[in-house]
Image (tube, rainbow, N blue to C red):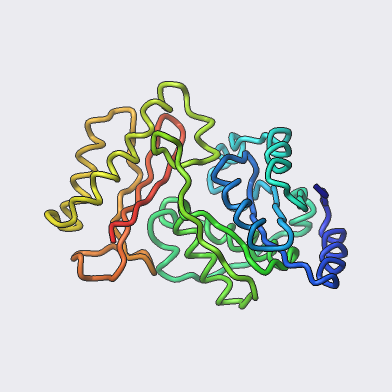
Length: 280
Protein backbone atom coordinates (compact mmCIF):
# COMPACT_ATOMS: atom_id res chain seq x y z
CA UNK A 1 0.00 0.00 0.00
CA UNK A 2 1.32 3.39 -1.04
CA UNK A 3 0.79 6.18 1.53
CA UNK A 4 0.66 9.76 0.27
CA UNK A 5 0.19 12.75 2.58
CA UNK A 6 0.42 15.77 0.28
CA UNK A 7 -1.87 16.98 -2.48
CA UNK A 8 1.03 17.64 -4.82
CA UNK A 9 2.41 14.11 -4.43
CA UNK A 10 -1.01 12.60 -5.00
CA UNK A 11 -1.63 14.65 -8.14
CA UNK A 12 1.69 13.49 -9.61
CA UNK A 13 0.84 9.85 -8.82
CA UNK A 14 -2.70 10.26 -10.16
CA UNK A 15 -1.37 11.57 -13.48
CA UNK A 16 0.99 8.60 -13.77
CA UNK A 17 -1.87 6.17 -13.15
CA UNK A 18 -4.16 8.00 -15.56
CA UNK A 19 -1.51 7.77 -18.28
CA UNK A 20 -1.47 4.02 -17.70
CA UNK A 21 -5.26 3.93 -18.16
CA UNK A 22 -5.94 2.86 -14.57
CA UNK A 23 -9.39 3.44 -13.08
CA UNK A 24 -9.69 4.56 -9.45
CA UNK A 25 -12.39 3.51 -7.01
CA UNK A 26 -12.44 5.85 -4.01
CA UNK A 27 -13.67 5.40 -0.44
CA UNK A 28 -13.36 8.57 1.68
CA UNK A 29 -13.23 7.91 5.43
CA UNK A 30 -12.42 9.61 8.72
CA UNK A 31 -10.62 6.50 9.94
CA UNK A 32 -11.76 4.37 12.89
CA UNK A 33 -12.47 1.78 10.21
CA UNK A 34 -14.90 -1.11 10.63
CA UNK A 35 -16.40 -3.86 8.52
CA UNK A 36 -18.85 -1.42 6.94
CA UNK A 37 -15.95 0.56 5.48
CA UNK A 38 -14.25 -2.63 4.36
CA UNK A 39 -17.34 -3.70 2.42
CA UNK A 40 -17.23 -0.42 0.50
CA UNK A 41 -13.55 -0.99 -0.19
CA UNK A 42 -14.01 -4.57 -1.38
CA UNK A 43 -16.64 -3.42 -3.84
CA UNK A 44 -14.46 -0.52 -5.02
CA UNK A 45 -11.53 -2.91 -5.45
CA UNK A 46 -13.70 -5.31 -7.45
CA UNK A 47 -15.14 -2.65 -9.78
CA UNK A 48 -11.97 -0.63 -10.49
CA UNK A 49 -8.30 -1.18 -11.29
CA UNK A 50 -7.11 0.44 -8.07
CA UNK A 51 -8.59 1.17 -4.63
CA UNK A 52 -7.90 4.61 -3.15
CA UNK A 53 -8.88 5.35 0.47
CA UNK A 54 -8.56 8.63 2.32
CA UNK A 55 -8.34 9.02 6.07
CA UNK A 56 -9.04 12.58 7.16
CA UNK A 57 -10.97 13.68 10.24
CA UNK A 58 -12.62 16.73 8.75
CA UNK A 59 -12.89 19.43 11.45
CA UNK A 60 -15.29 21.69 9.55
CA UNK A 61 -18.11 19.14 9.51
CA UNK A 62 -18.26 18.96 13.32
CA UNK A 63 -20.58 21.57 14.75
CA UNK A 64 -19.79 20.17 18.22
CA UNK A 65 -16.08 20.54 19.05
CA UNK A 66 -16.35 17.98 21.87
CA UNK A 67 -17.54 15.46 19.30
CA UNK A 68 -14.47 16.24 17.18
CA UNK A 69 -12.15 15.72 20.17
CA UNK A 70 -13.81 12.40 21.04
CA UNK A 71 -13.84 11.04 17.49
CA UNK A 72 -11.89 7.75 17.59
CA UNK A 73 -8.44 7.80 16.02
CA UNK A 74 -7.10 4.29 15.47
CA UNK A 75 -4.48 4.67 12.74
CA UNK A 76 -2.46 1.53 13.51
CA UNK A 77 -5.54 -0.69 13.37
CA UNK A 78 -6.81 1.19 10.31
CA UNK A 79 -3.57 0.43 8.44
CA UNK A 80 -3.92 -3.28 9.18
CA UNK A 81 -7.51 -3.25 7.93
CA UNK A 82 -6.51 -1.44 4.74
CA UNK A 83 -3.81 -4.03 4.11
CA UNK A 84 -6.40 -6.78 4.59
CA UNK A 85 -8.45 -5.50 1.63
CA UNK A 86 -5.35 -4.81 -0.50
CA UNK A 87 -5.78 -1.05 -0.59
CA UNK A 88 -3.52 0.38 -3.29
CA UNK A 89 -3.24 4.02 -2.23
CA UNK A 90 -3.94 5.76 1.06
CA UNK A 91 -4.32 9.54 1.00
CA UNK A 92 -3.59 10.71 4.55
CA UNK A 93 -3.34 14.52 4.63
CA UNK A 94 -3.05 16.85 7.61
CA UNK A 95 -5.60 19.56 8.34
CA UNK A 96 -3.00 22.15 7.27
CA UNK A 97 -2.54 20.36 3.96
CA UNK A 98 -6.26 20.28 3.23
CA UNK A 99 -7.04 23.77 4.54
CA UNK A 100 -3.99 26.02 4.23
CA UNK A 101 -6.31 29.03 4.19
CA UNK A 102 -9.69 29.86 5.71
CA UNK A 103 -12.59 28.17 3.91
CA UNK A 104 -15.65 30.29 3.19
CA UNK A 105 -17.44 28.17 0.57
CA UNK A 106 -21.19 27.89 0.99
CA UNK A 107 -23.41 25.37 -0.77
CA UNK A 108 -27.15 25.67 -1.07
CA UNK A 109 -28.73 22.23 -1.07
CA UNK A 110 -32.19 23.66 -0.46
CA UNK A 111 -34.69 21.76 1.62
CA UNK A 112 -32.61 18.57 1.43
CA UNK A 113 -30.13 20.08 3.91
CA UNK A 114 -32.71 21.63 6.25
CA UNK A 115 -34.18 18.44 7.73
CA UNK A 116 -32.97 15.72 10.10
CA UNK A 117 -29.15 15.84 10.26
CA UNK A 118 -29.15 19.27 8.64
CA UNK A 119 -31.51 20.63 11.29
CA UNK A 120 -29.77 18.84 14.17
CA UNK A 121 -26.21 19.73 13.10
CA UNK A 122 -26.11 23.23 11.55
CA UNK A 123 -23.29 23.64 9.04
CA UNK A 124 -22.54 19.92 8.97
CA UNK A 125 -23.43 19.29 5.34
CA UNK A 126 -21.62 22.39 4.13
CA UNK A 127 -18.49 21.00 5.81
CA UNK A 128 -19.10 17.60 4.22
CA UNK A 129 -19.57 19.17 0.77
CA UNK A 130 -16.37 21.21 1.06
CA UNK A 131 -14.18 18.24 1.95
CA UNK A 132 -15.81 15.79 -0.46
CA UNK A 133 -15.47 18.19 -3.39
CA UNK A 134 -11.84 18.83 -2.50
CA UNK A 135 -11.11 15.11 -2.22
CA UNK A 136 -12.84 14.40 -5.55
CA UNK A 137 -10.78 17.10 -7.24
CA UNK A 138 -7.55 15.71 -5.77
CA UNK A 139 -8.26 12.01 -6.35
CA UNK A 140 -10.26 12.30 -9.62
CA UNK A 141 -11.82 8.85 -9.16
CA UNK A 142 -14.12 7.25 -11.71
CA UNK A 143 -16.33 5.91 -8.91
CA UNK A 144 -16.79 6.80 -5.23
CA UNK A 145 -18.54 4.60 -2.67
CA UNK A 146 -20.79 5.72 0.19
CA UNK A 147 -22.85 3.76 2.71
CA UNK A 148 -26.61 4.20 2.99
CA UNK A 149 -26.42 4.44 6.79
CA UNK A 150 -25.63 8.11 6.18
CA UNK A 151 -28.50 8.31 3.69
CA UNK A 152 -28.91 12.08 3.86
CA UNK A 153 -25.17 12.61 3.38
CA UNK A 154 -25.33 10.32 0.35
CA UNK A 155 -28.20 12.38 -1.10
CA UNK A 156 -26.22 15.60 -0.49
CA UNK A 157 -23.16 14.22 -2.28
CA UNK A 158 -25.27 13.00 -5.20
CA UNK A 159 -26.66 16.53 -5.49
CA UNK A 160 -23.19 18.09 -5.11
CA UNK A 161 -21.70 16.26 -8.09
CA UNK A 162 -24.60 17.42 -10.25
CA UNK A 163 -24.34 21.03 -9.05
CA UNK A 164 -20.58 21.47 -9.70
CA UNK A 165 -20.62 19.25 -11.89
CA UNK A 166 -18.03 16.53 -11.22
CA UNK A 167 -17.47 13.50 -13.43
CA UNK A 168 -17.52 10.88 -10.69
CA UNK A 169 -20.12 8.15 -10.35
CA UNK A 170 -21.52 7.90 -6.82
CA UNK A 171 -22.15 4.29 -5.80
CA UNK A 172 -24.61 3.79 -2.91
CA UNK A 173 -23.91 0.71 -0.77
CA UNK A 174 -26.26 -1.05 1.62
CA UNK A 175 -25.98 -0.64 5.39
CA UNK A 176 -23.66 -3.20 6.97
CA UNK A 177 -24.88 -4.41 10.35
CA UNK A 178 -23.49 -6.29 13.30
CA UNK A 179 -24.92 -9.77 13.94
CA UNK A 180 -27.45 -8.24 16.35
CA UNK A 181 -28.60 -5.65 13.79
CA UNK A 182 -26.77 -2.55 15.03
CA UNK A 183 -25.65 -0.46 12.06
CA UNK A 184 -21.86 -0.43 11.93
CA UNK A 185 -20.39 2.93 12.88
CA UNK A 186 -17.08 4.27 14.14
CA UNK A 187 -19.04 5.72 17.06
CA UNK A 188 -20.02 2.24 18.26
CA UNK A 189 -16.58 1.80 19.83
CA UNK A 190 -17.42 4.65 22.22
CA UNK A 191 -20.38 2.73 23.71
CA UNK A 192 -19.98 1.21 27.16
CA UNK A 193 -20.64 -2.51 27.58
CA UNK A 194 -24.17 -1.86 28.85
CA UNK A 195 -24.89 0.67 26.10
CA UNK A 196 -23.66 -1.74 23.43
CA UNK A 197 -25.99 -4.39 24.86
CA UNK A 198 -28.93 -1.95 24.60
CA UNK A 199 -28.06 -0.56 21.15
CA UNK A 200 -29.76 -3.25 18.97
CA UNK A 201 -33.11 -1.93 20.23
CA UNK A 202 -32.80 0.69 17.45
CA UNK A 203 -32.71 -1.93 14.70
CA UNK A 204 -35.35 -4.10 16.37
CA UNK A 205 -37.76 -1.17 16.62
CA UNK A 206 -37.21 -0.08 13.01
CA UNK A 207 -37.68 -3.65 11.83
CA UNK A 208 -41.08 -3.83 13.54
CA UNK A 209 -42.04 -0.33 12.39
CA UNK A 210 -41.62 -0.99 8.68
CA UNK A 211 -44.19 -3.79 8.89
CA UNK A 212 -46.86 -1.49 10.31
CA UNK A 213 -47.40 0.84 7.36
CA UNK A 214 -50.43 -1.21 6.28
CA UNK A 215 -52.27 -0.34 9.51
CA UNK A 216 -50.76 2.97 10.67
CA UNK A 217 -50.44 6.35 8.97
CA UNK A 218 -46.95 7.95 8.80
CA UNK A 219 -47.75 10.15 11.81
CA UNK A 220 -49.14 7.21 13.78
CA UNK A 221 -46.09 5.14 12.92
CA UNK A 222 -43.75 7.89 14.05
CA UNK A 223 -45.64 8.14 17.35
CA UNK A 224 -45.50 4.35 17.73
CA UNK A 225 -41.68 4.48 17.50
CA UNK A 226 -41.49 7.38 19.96
CA UNK A 227 -43.67 5.45 22.40
CA UNK A 228 -41.42 2.39 22.12
CA UNK A 229 -38.33 4.46 22.94
CA UNK A 230 -40.08 6.18 25.84
CA UNK A 231 -39.95 2.80 27.64
CA UNK A 232 -36.14 2.72 27.29
CA UNK A 233 -34.70 5.43 29.59
CA UNK A 234 -31.12 4.88 28.40
CA UNK A 235 -32.08 6.35 25.01
CA UNK A 236 -32.77 9.98 24.24
CA UNK A 237 -34.47 10.59 20.89
CA UNK A 238 -33.03 13.33 18.69
CA UNK A 239 -35.51 12.77 15.87
CA UNK A 240 -37.70 10.20 14.16
CA UNK A 241 -38.83 11.05 10.64
CA UNK A 242 -40.73 9.23 7.92
CA UNK A 243 -39.72 10.80 4.63
CA UNK A 244 -39.66 10.31 0.88
CA UNK A 245 -36.38 9.07 -0.55
CA UNK A 246 -35.42 11.99 -2.86
CA UNK A 247 -35.59 15.33 -1.00
CA UNK A 248 -36.17 13.58 2.36
CA UNK A 249 -39.27 15.60 3.15
CA UNK A 250 -41.74 14.19 5.68
CA UNK A 251 -44.75 12.37 4.22
CA UNK A 252 -48.28 12.78 5.53
CA UNK A 253 -49.80 9.92 3.50
CA UNK A 254 -48.21 6.76 2.18
CA UNK A 255 -49.18 7.69 -1.38
CA UNK A 256 -47.22 10.97 -1.17
CA UNK A 257 -44.14 9.28 -2.67
CA UNK A 258 -43.00 6.17 -4.52
CA UNK A 259 -40.23 5.51 -2.00
CA UNK A 260 -40.32 6.11 1.75
CA UNK A 261 -37.85 5.47 4.57
CA UNK A 262 -37.92 5.82 8.32
CA UNK A 263 -34.97 7.71 9.84
CA UNK A 264 -33.87 7.88 13.44
CA UNK A 265 -31.19 9.60 15.51
CA UNK A 266 -30.77 8.81 19.20
CA UNK A 267 -28.36 9.46 22.01
CA UNK A 268 -27.29 6.36 23.89
CA UNK A 269 -25.37 7.74 26.82
CA UNK A 270 -23.17 10.41 25.23
CA UNK A 271 -22.98 8.68 21.85
CA UNK A 272 -25.23 9.78 19.01
CA UNK A 273 -26.33 6.97 16.69
CA UNK A 274 -28.28 7.16 13.43
CA UNK A 275 -30.04 4.51 11.38
CA UNK A 276 -32.67 4.20 8.68
CA UNK A 277 -34.74 1.53 7.00
CA UNK A 278 -36.73 1.52 3.78
CA UNK A 279 -40.47 1.07 4.21
CA UNK A 280 -41.10 0.75 0.46
